[in-house]
Amino acid sequence: MLAAGAAPTPARGGAGGGDRWAGAAAEAVGSARGIAAPSTPGQVRPRVALEDPGTAAYRGLFAAVGIDGVPLAVGTEGIDPAELAAHGARGAVLTPSHQFPSGIAYSARRRSGLLDWARAADGLLVEDDYDGDFRYDRAPVGALQGLDPGRVVYTGSVSKSLAPGLRLGWMVVPQSLVDEVVERKRTMDLGHPVLDQALFADLIERGDYDRQLRRCQRAYRERRDALVTALAEHFPGTRVTGIAAGLHVIAHLPERYGPRESFLARAERAGVALAPLDAYACGTAPEWHARPGVRLVLGYAHLSPSRIVAAVRQLRHPDR
Ligand SMILES: Cc1ncc(COP(=O)(O)O)c(C=O)c1O
Image (cartoon, rainbow, N blue to C red):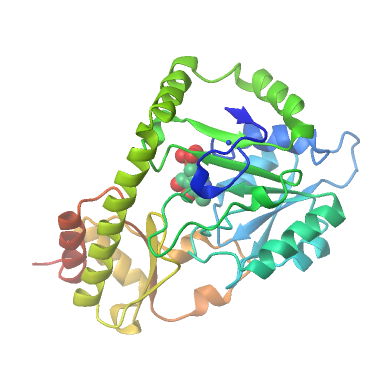
């Protein structure tokens, strides 16, 4: 689905809707914006900034269409626009509402600084709003795209609210790019299944999608609470960081539960699938690796509270 100018969900305040920001979209938007690969051999390859820690697969997706992905440290506030300028980036892929995986929300300063950069450098920001409907402590922050629809591409999907296997999503692109992006998408895959899109449209019109979002919000919050409580009980001293949002937390376990390798091996023996935070590091922040303790990215949304509690207990006592 492609749109320019219509809101995806009123709560987010964005101006309209993609698939995961996939290789196809990368090429579509990249080339439409003049970011795409150089046509002359020897010409410098265009660059797009990516978050570090972040989704490592993006680098490969961009490389496949002749664009270099440059990882930039997220820090505590989000990517620094000065770094974008220093690296000569033409665009950036961001998760400003709830950075994946670190869990921070971009500060107001960074949000406006990034928009300023995009205006000054004729750059494009891609706002990957993968879990923005789920915030548990306050109303969700408005989408960056709503602040400058001419400079931001907004992407979202039903993967967190219905099922990832549906492969249904939306991409809101600046008006000036719509025709070219639609054409690019058409030549890449000849389009998405119409029936799925029609059914989804019906779900929205009848108000059922809003009800589903509210159901998910309640269930995920309960699961998050169960996880945080179980960690406090079974791994005292654990710090959970990141905003209260989305489908995952970052858990910093005290050093005494490490070292990291033996903790992960124990988890595997206990049958608990876990991802360490540094699995998402892309190289700009070596201090991440140097820190003591075990830092985990824990997803909870797909498990019932009782299974979450059982898994944490199992992690603590794998041999019982
Ligand atoms: C950072 C990030 N962006 C986007 C997505 C959504 O991907 P998709 O909509 O293709 O399922 C995910 C899914 O886990 C994600 O972690």
